[in-house]
Amino acid sequence: MNLQIHWKIFFGLCLGFILGILSRIFGFQEIVLNYVSVIGTVFLRALRMIIVPLIVSSIISSVAGIGSAERFGRLSLKALFYYVITSLLAIVTGLTLANVIKPGVGAQLGLGAQPVELPADAAKFGDILLGIIPTNPLASMVKGEIVPVIFFSLLFGFFITRASDPYKDQLRKFFQGVFEVMMLFTQFIIRFTPLGVFALLAEVTAKNGPGVFIPLGSYMLTVVIGLMIHACITLPALLLLTGGIKPFALFKAVTSALMTAFSTASSSATLPLTIDSVRKNAGVSCDVSGFVLPLGATINMDGTALYECVAAIFIAQAYGIELSLVQQITVVVTALLASVGAAAVPMAGLVMIVIILRAVGLPLEGVGLILAVDRILDMMRTSVNVWSDTCGAVIIARSEGEKNLKVKR
Ligand code: ASP
Image 1 (cartoon, protein in one colour):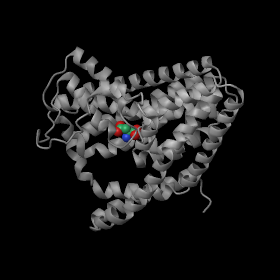
Image 2: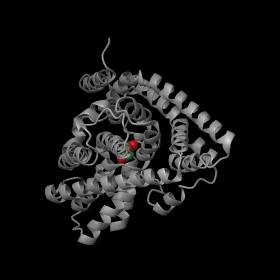
Image 3: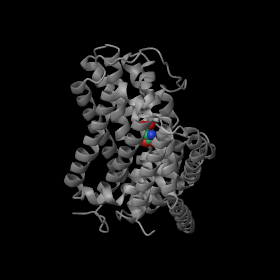
Image 4: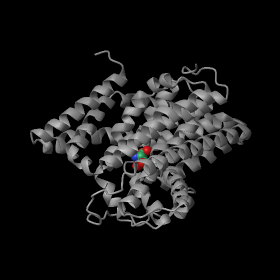
């Protein structure tokens, strides 16, 4: 069939959802959970297989290609500025909605009944900051620790531009070559995305029936409305105002990546598709996309930031704890830090809520309250995270005066 890939992925999503529902109705969940899910696992493993070499080659080749220290500094500043502003806008949206809708007031949740197991180091933000610097970059690559790998690659790329002549060019070409090969890998894996997405959706739907949503309905609604406002109003407004970019054209250009983000709930697993669509369909240069997107996938998480904020306030409301203004400001700041520190993998945001709960003195078991609906919200917030990364890449490319953008007004 000669359908465009994003349509195939869309049908994969729908069919997966339908199969999951049918498996619940006719009681063949086991088959979906034991067999169909294997296809999803294979797809995810294939994506994860290419992430480290893709990130390393993409960042090194683009930073080496950026050339001057001045341009490198300017791009980094623009990217960080964009990440902080959009994350704060997302958090303020979440804060406002949580205070207006008050999803946790009077919620009947059987408090304290289901404490969740949290990794012991979930709340040590200082360690996360220190962990940016790898003591052994190869060990970080082997363990798949993305932040230190990015840090090392940024420096490596930068110092290539300082190397003396034959090496400078040879190294740049070498990493461009590796990047080219990784993109070919990506395009090969993308062909299987509809199937992978189908299996992942079938598994999630078979596991979580609609029943889990009912007691947490207004909490979910608050998060979803917030995410919609951020994705459909705030970010498009930024695209129009700061970059003269057509939001819908960009949305069409990156739909495959957004749907993959939805089904995998992982910005880093989606990264290969994000880079591919931003380069090919939106026309952003390799220099900018190769640098801004891996960085964005790792530290720019607007959806996660918004969700963290709503979740913390929901937990406070559910426990009947009134948050003072200072505590609310603490929620905003820690939600920003937690979204930066969250790994780009499923459920990372849920674990990071502990940072906020600690900072404002809320009961940590509160995380257990929202566990049941985390997966579906994770899928949605991850799509928003990836959408914001693509918006950032295009806005920065435009501000650099790139001529080949295909999504300009
Ligand atoms: N799953 C999200 C992501 O990869 C992170 C989170 O859990 O919020 O972008």
